[in-house]
Image 1 (cartoon, rainbow, N blue to C red):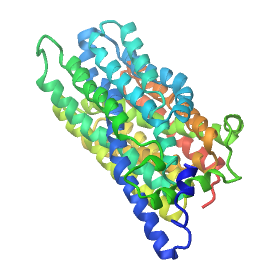
Image 2: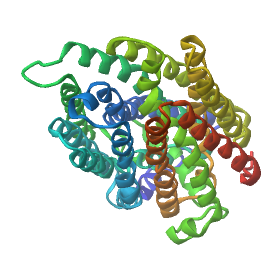
Image 3: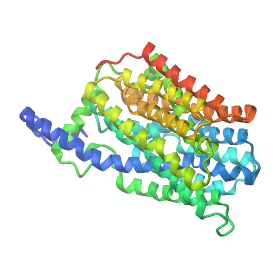
Image 4: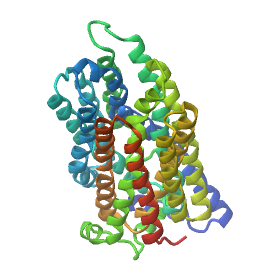
Length: 441
C-alpha cells in the first residue's frame, strides 16, 4: 500500500480544492458501483438461505410432525453457532483477507442449506441449522469491516444503508420466490416443495462463493479499475482515519470498552425485531387469513419494500446532517410501536399488515445508522473484533426472538404475546441509545 503512495508523488497534493473534491467523489462513486451491488447480491443469498425456513415451515412442520416450539428452537439455534464463530471469523478475515474469507463462508452456507432436504427428525433440524450458523458466521461483520477499508466515516452510514438494503431486498425477492417454488415444485421427482426450496436456493450461493475469488479486490490498492491517483486518495482518507488517536486499535481495547458492550445490547434489541419479521412474517400473514403460498409470499414483500426505502433514506439523512443518535432511537421507537400494533390488530388483516409495515420501516431504518456508531471509536484489530463481538451478541436475539414467539404461540395459542415481547426489546433499544450513546457530529 505504501509503495503505491510513494510511487505516485504529487498525485493528490497541490490540487485545487474543487478538483480534489471532484476526484474524491469520482473515486468513491466508482467503488460504490463496483462493490456494493456485488456485496448486496451475496447478502441476499445469505439472507434467503438463512430465513427460507420460515416459508418451508408452512408445509415442513406438517410433513415432519414438528411443533411450533421445535420450529422456533431450530430457527433460532442458527444464531448460537453464529455467535460462537463470529469473532474468530472476523479476526481471520483481517489476517488472510476478505476474498478467501467471504468465499469460504458463501460456499459452505450454500451446501448446508441444500443439506436441509435430508431433515427428518428435530435433532437433524437443530444440527443443520446450527451448522448453517457456524458457516455463515463472520459474513455480515466481515462486510462491515471490509467497507471500512474503502470508505471513511463521513460516508459510511449511506454506504451501510445501501449494503443493508440487502435485508429488505431479500425479503422482497425471497417471499415471492419461495412462494412460487413451493407452489410449483411439490412432489416433483419425489421431493416435497420445502425440500426443493432448500435445493434451488442453495445452489446459487455455492456458485457465488466461487465468483468472490475472481471478482472481489482486497483494498483500494488492489483495485485495477481505480487510477493511481484515486487509489492514493482513498487510501490516504482511510489511513488518516485509522490513525485517529481517539480510536481504539487493539482487540483488548475493544473488549474492555464499555461502549462496545452497550452497542451489543442495543443491537440485540434491534435484531430481535429483524428476526421476527424474517422468520414469522409468513406465519403472521397466514394468521390473517391469507391462503396459498404464493399469495403469502407476495404479501410478505410489502413490509420489506417499505423498509428498503426507509433504510436508504435514513442513512442518507444521517450522513447529510452528521447526526447518528436520534436516527437510531426514533427508528427503534417506531419499530416498538409497529410491533405492538401488529399484535393488537391481528383480527384485522388490513390494519395488521399496515402495522407490520410500520414495524419493518423502523427495524430496517435503524441498521445502517447503528453501524456508524462502533466504527466511530474503533479501528484496526479493535474494529475487527469489536464489530464481530457486537454482531455476534446482537444476533443471539435471532435465537431468543423466534424461540420466544414459538413458545408463546405454543403456550397461549396466540402470536400477539410474542410480538409484545419483541416490541418491548425495541423500546429498550431506544432507551439505551438515548441514555448511553454520545457521538460527535
